[in-house]
Amino acid sequence: MPELPETETIARDLHAAIAGSVIISVEVLRRDVLRDVSAARVRQSLTSRTVSRAWRRAKSVVLSLDHDAHLVVTPRFTGALILGAAAAEDRYACVRMGLEDGRELRYTDVRRLGTVAFLSSDAFAEWSAALGPEPLDADFTVERFSGCLRGSKRAVKAVLMDQSRLAGVGNIYANEALWRAGVRPSRRASSLTRRERATLHAELTAVLHAAVAARGTSFRDYRDAFGARGGFASQLQAYGRGGQPCTRCGLPLKSSHAIDGRATVWCAGCQQ
Ligand SMILES: [Zn+2]
Image 1 (cartoon, rainbow, N blue to C red):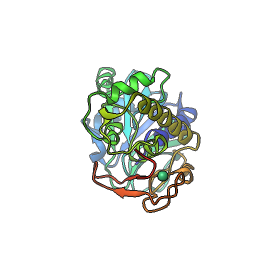
Image 2: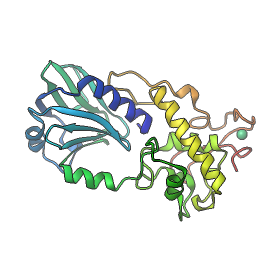
Image 3: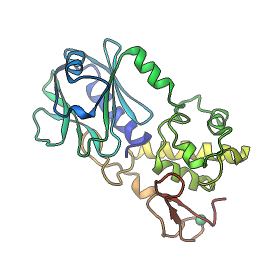
């Protein structure tokens, strides 16, 4: 499932490739990926519009249009935004957008659990306001991070992944940040000391920066806008390594689904 680094990679690539491009045709092939908008409105609202900016908020790619409305694409498990030649064979294509220069941007999704939303300026502001701060923003200080964790009796891993508290972090990077920081994922968020919060803040931002630099992690399905895999999987220390030796202390890593139903991997030797 694309998290911050993967979505950031897609958004940066798309911005470089299509900012300033005009959408000349829109075809909705699978209506069930649309959220709170009809296929007709998507067609009307996008056709003849210029993409002014492609960027990321949380785990969504945002295409901002010249009339200050936004297409918000959330790939979830198997969704992908692919830029390529028009009319390319793609049996999983859900939405196709033809660009004036003959290229096509399409949203494709095998399981169709991802979503495509079209939001007015006001609706977008409301959606964004319900999300937590962006961990790679310059104003994401230790104090702001402490504010995300404050008062929560839930497991720190669950709070890291709660999009209303902190944007963009999912299972891969929550596991990695906690391993790097030496903090056990099941700890109550409110129990972390100031020093642990500072270490976790530093390791979380470091692992996200490193993963963006490697163009994300392709564990199963994730592909970038040109269909290529991300390169961060070889740097993973915890996620996907249950039962394998901890690279810091040598003990076998533990794995459980107890916290949030997702695979949590940690080292009982060096995560306190
Ligand atoms: Zn260890």
